[in-house]
Length: 301
Figure 1 (cartoon, helix red, strand yellow):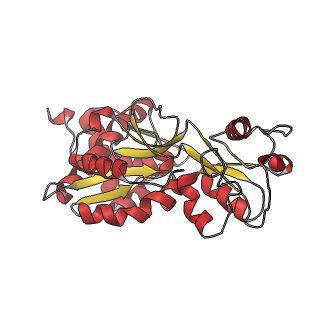
Figure 2: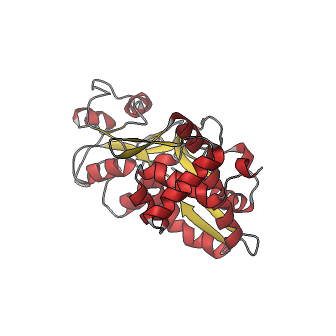
């Protein structure tokens, strides 16, 4: 049985060495001597009877068996660490919540509201996972993500938060009387909403301009900053830009029209709270979900 349950410190030495492909760097990360890490790897190989590393050109490279083993135990160690952290922080029924959010939504909508959540649930500790990893719901250290899209993500429950209402924004100095006058402007695009200007033109009856021409950017924050700088006009979720309009940093040329209030349109994409079905019930996620979905985020009302 001992052979099938290697001690945790041996597994940690193995995974860390695999990450750095170098015993010296692994030793530094583990706060051990180089010889101690080498002995632990050798002990794990003796215990399993399998060669885990090959030395090629003075570098340690995982053997084929070592690659399979590392891929299998790495998420288990991460899950164990997350469970231990939650245990430590859950003395009064709270715990840790690992979440990810797209940067613009986090900065504009979520972070300003978090003090209220912390006041309601001081026993819950929030840990933000890098947003580039926010789509991987197989991760042991990811409980939920705030994503932008049409509400469909494989393996995840998706609950709408905000963002269907798109606002048209322009540089503060721009003066136009009708939507048709924007046909000759530079149109900025978000790569995740490639049909935004097509929807807008259909709603407002604007024709005779290239719907796909113009710079493409990968974050709404970048679109807003580009408009502030005078690069062109853009369509962004109103929940992200309400404060900028109020502060005069950008303008909403047609905010009194009959098409949603801010010269934009109501689309099918938006921000969603996403989480695996299997993690629906843990207390920290349940509290965060109920609080987030009850927020009154600015829409075009």
